[in-house]
Length: 166
Image (cartoon, rainbow, N blue to C red; front, side, top):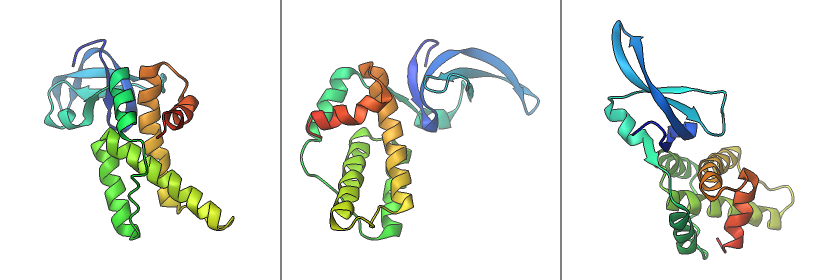
């Protein structure tokens, strides 16, 4: 990771590496990367420059070509609905933690499909709150990255995905 790089850092989303800073923690001076979240400019995140944990939380951002390829591969009706609530929550939690974009897209498709299916069967039926939260988190994760890379507004990402026959 270098100063000026744009990365994805855990739940903080798209961040620009703004610099390195020495900080005193536990009476030891260590170097920390200074990250500025792109969509939350008032925030600053500090992560140790030397850390094994950082390797799993920092991901590179996709290129526009990689996004288009990913979305093309995802077109169709490959929904994975898990009926057992506990099992579904565990599965979706792992997907969010891993940050695998294919799985995130599949999760978004499945939850949006399920929401529509419930709406079609009864006006009173809705997704469970936990499923709505998973959908919101997955969309936030992908929308920030896709909007940044494709240079579009956040609210344009979901319509863009459906235009691509997601």
